[in-house]
Length: 71
Image 1 (spheres, rainbow, N blue to C red):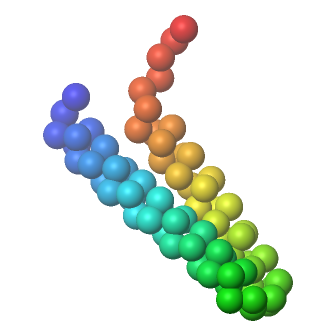
Image 2 (cartoon, helix red, strand yellow):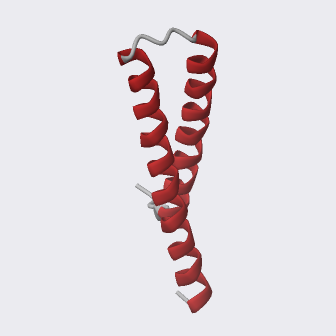
């Protein structure tokens, strides 16, 4: 493993941390909107789509960080 690989993995870990943080934040916003009784289904629907896209990105980054192991 060379220095570039180490730097790439560090960047991926930082990206993963940011994506997870964004995912949690959006989830909390959705819950808050529901709790205060705001029924803006269009906004909630958009937020859920963003949350799902973040989940997909998180999965891609985790796959890049996980070494391939042949069973």
